[in-house]
Length: 74
Image 1 (tube, rainbow, N blue to C red):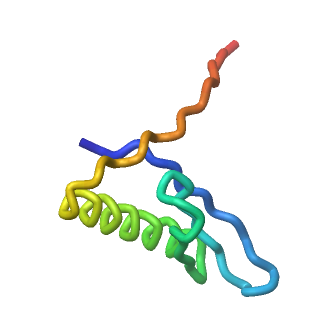
Image 2: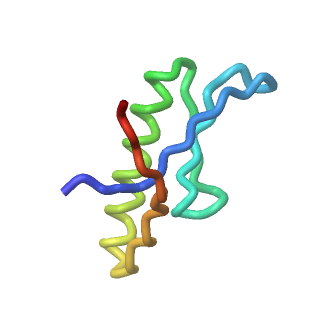
């Protein structure tokens, strides 16, 4: 099963890095990367570690944020 959690990636001019947020896991669930690809990889690794930690502690996983978007192709 692939987890359906949000990975938000934003460029930080101040840090000169891509900042990764995992909003379902709270305001302190962050990582970063020097490139966009590194940021994605690091975000996926942190997400996996968070899920493992929640499961090891017997904590329920947060509900994924879902988008209510319909795509129309013409």
